[in-house]
Image (cartoon, rainbow, N blue to C red):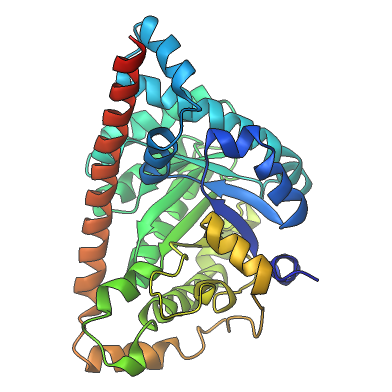
Length: 358
């Protein structure tokens, strides 16, 4: 049995953290679904920037929309929605077979809205309506301002992928926003069956602490943060508050491990896959990491529901001088800025293609 299939059997969903026009038209995504147990897909501004700037696959559509007078930002969303609709249709059988648990794709609102609650909610509603697919998440950053947007989007019936989470506290805030949205729906006589995932970014912890920790703690913070967050996730699902929501028909906001491509050339290329195998979670991975794991990955012991050694490891990291809360805040802020930069580059790439075809 392939390592990817072992993860699926263990109850973890494998999603691909990538989308390009070529991936769709070549049949590669369909092959990954059929042979590598891929059951969903995520995207972000950086991924779309690479898809547009490093391939001519979208040029004809860009030129046609340019002639029709479509503005650059609207042009991007039309391109993205078309590709994600095609991907969503490929995953639709999985979505239906799992009663909506799996088979999702994700589209992010403009990262420039990360700190504007009202505009984020408006964009989330508009994009979800335009996509017109039941298995499409709208990604909303889990910033302080994003919490209100998450709650409001869920209350409005928009499925949400909460992104840019970097700690247990970030996750808990996102989960509470999700539950508030569901509780408001129940109070209004609406169905609480509005799905969500909470995306915890893992590998950026290790990149940020490489020069701050002794060698024995190298590449351990990310997995420890993930273990601690997983423990919080399991505790929440067992809580009285969640059980009440579940009695009304709500489904858990699944924990998703993101940023799981290895950045340290000295570490295993599948470091964050085998270490974070856990039931009822998702691991979304870059294409290269997926292929590496399928080729030589292994699934050992599943992540314990209490996070295993996470707490002890985090204590060692704190003793070594790392302020976990401060670094989590910095990572979230830096992540938002990085997506802003990718968004600007993406729009420049589209503008360049528009000018060439003019």
